[in-house]
Image 1 (cartoon, one colour):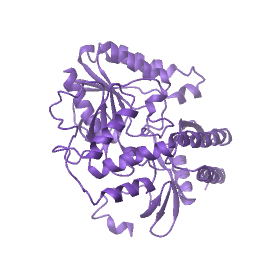
Image 2 (tube, rainbow, N blue to C red):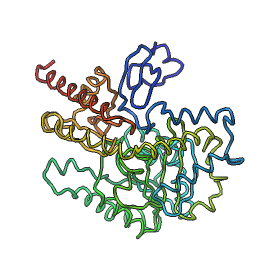
Image 3 (tube, rainbow, N blue to C red):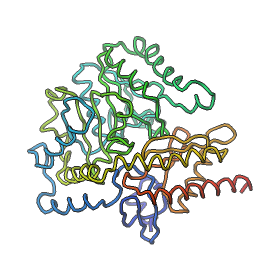
Length: 428
């Protein structure tokens, strides 16, 4: 069945050879009746078909199907803005809507250039900020570089990774010192004058880069550099926002307040919506922004309704605490597995964002990670490979996952690791 769609729908092969039929929170079912625990995505914080989101959409779909915020706001459009202002860690925030995280990141960078009247953006190796314009230019992975516009006003610095320090028994903050010294010694004053740096854009943790979670001091140092140079600090929370890390937003783990924050994915309950929060009056004279909307369908009526229901569900069901507890449940088992399997060298993350990294003969192993991925698939758990070497399995269940479902997932992970251990031992 899936092959018949390729000529008209798919331009590249999907991650899994299944056709999804339906889902409920952390579970999905395929057209042929197979059930999976979904640890593969982060686009839906609540998972699939959360009752509160579904009922809210049903209630509103007969009122308006879509009305452009460029013309006039709807009531959910306005209410959502107030709700976002109440939860974002951005002082006196103004909110603008977009349709996707890529659009929101692109706009955040445009605005930084506009309000600072500066041209240069600093991003980080391993980052992923989207597939459009400036967002694409700020995502310096190999595949992205092939299609990104060739513009010289985006510079890159190392993103701190604690695993090399851990493997070499070095002090934990060495990776932070490396990154910050690179910025201060090789970029500012050499590659760009301080007065030309418009913004630093950074993720609280890198998902695409391999579930890399730097020490808090890294973000505190970036805040200091932003203050000293007058550049804006943009934090990309498209992946990490809305409870996934055990807090509303990932940057809250680090005690840093950004000037601009980008949101998307999990905020829509499964519908496409994104937003940008700007500190104070940064947004006021941005002439491209009309009514807080960045495009015809930005802040779409039904997406705003779904987003309001998502925020309500997170609050009422105490899902941020659930993400934290389920994350601790998972991470404690993953740490134990690291001690038991020689090809599993690290586990890391927070809340419902976890990763396990695989090595073979002292080097990153895409092959072993791929074996684990398919062993998980065969046992009913969806997870994907990420990282520069594709040797990290990303484990990102929705924050609605139950204790029992997490226990099931842990058993599947253990069985899969045992299977890979057996195959490697027998040389199959």
